[in-house]
Amino acid sequence: MIIGGAVGAVVLAVIGGTLVYVNSGGDYLALPDDCSEVVGDDLLNDVFEGTVPSLDGEFTREGAAEEGLHGMLFCSGSENGVELGVHVQLYDREASDRESDMDRAFDMEGDGGDLIQDEEIPPGEVTEHSFGTDVSTVQILWDEPSIGDRSLVVGSVDPGGDYMSQFGMGVARQENAVLALTVDYSGASSSPEIEEIYDRTEAALGAVAEQLPRVAER
Image 1 (cartoon, rainbow, N blue to C red):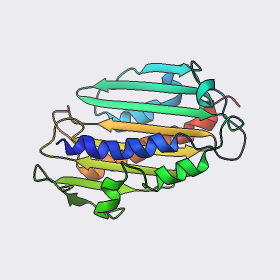
Image 2 (image 1 turned 60 degrees about the vertical axis):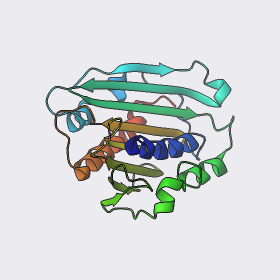
Image 3 (image 1 turned 90 degrees about the vertical axis):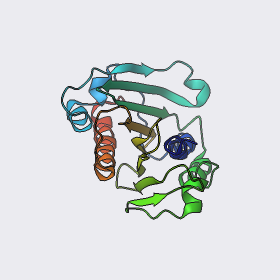
Image 4 (image 1 turned 90 degrees about the horizontal axis):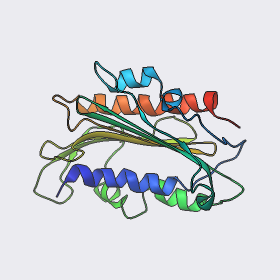
């Protein structure tokens, strides 16, 4: 069993649920097509040590209306074994009303959230967990920092893992936007300690949240 991937599924489950949430206020209607306008150089310098990559991706409206969205931004980049992914969805509040669905997912009451909830992992502390297996022990550090209207950030290090064995993941909601971000150091020659993975992930998520009102069309 790949514990790192399993913990990743926890956050993805939370993200998947959170993406149906909308909030009060004026909608963000669109974002720039250029990822670099949303994911700035400061963020990249924090995530990547040394050379920073060019980002691939764009803002699209394709299929958005069917999902109750104004549009979606997908950005990704990798350098020296470090991978970054940023995903922003802009919800059309007139087309969707699913706050209860988001609340259930964000409170980790969905299927994936059971992994952390059942283990009673405390926030803000580095703890070790085997998740009921004898394969390896995983370090977990998670919390709900003050980013946007609500946010969740998780760092994980699995010494015996392969896929997503050293990663950070975060999600935040801000007005009608929901941001999801992943930073994966599994392929790097050397990885930061879990506290630094968490700090870099939190800082990156916060940087995107701060940038949105500057560049979004309303």
